[in-house]
Length: 257
Ligand SMILES: C[S@@+](CC[C@H](N)C(=O)[O-])C[C@H]1O[C@@H](n2cnc3c(N)ncnc32)[C@H](O)[C@@H]1O
Image (cartoon, rainbow, N blue to C red; front, side):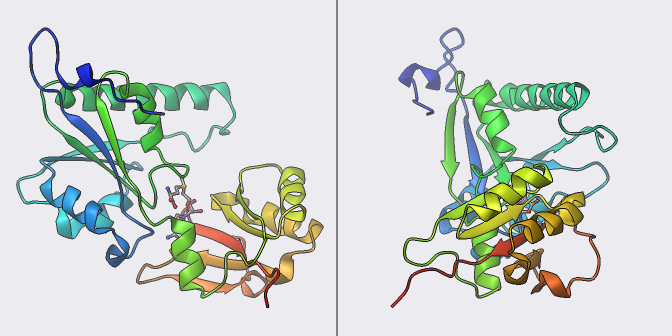
């Protein structure tokens, strides 16, 4: 919990009022699914920061673009290249930890001078969000606010016009990065599911869905709510190529009158 210490607002030595870090949830991709608060916070921001992959435009920035003021300063936080290293390898963990540390200090520089920073976040900041890595590093020194956003999975269920849950259905949110056996076990034990972070994991996920006898119910959503979204039954998808913004839904099918 980010329990705000009232003394956090002022730097005791310089007496400068410290800046506030805002994690701004921007929704699943369609800018019309931004909240009123997110639109206001982005419009009022003098500094926006956002994560991006090397050589690629920031997706969060693209969602919020129409609200970013002309004179707003931008702080891109570019992930280090780690594609050749498995995500559980110590080198990967160390590279990411160093990156988050450095990013936090870049923001701290502005916050300590009394400048607020809006960190643009896809979906909801607290659902597998990179924002959380900066919040944990900065919340003992600065005030942190979080603006909830419509999550990617909410947007995808709505775009696919599929129910998440009925009655007493249990919904499980699962990262596709888990091993096949763990995926199958979680899928078999739930009534409804969202499998995120498909990336290069779709082939493995298909096998886990087969193990859990859920293949026929699975729906593939790519870039949900965006202009070029793709929605199809997973059985109709011929290849195992899935971009970063893709997930698989297993809609609830439970008790109802
Ligand atoms: C690191 S997580 C961040 C989730 C984000 N904070 C949220 O609330 O949705 C990124 C994963 O979310 C899923 N995702 C988010 N938005 C999506 C969208 N519009 N369409 C499809 N998948 C999406 C994908 O599975 C992607 O790999």
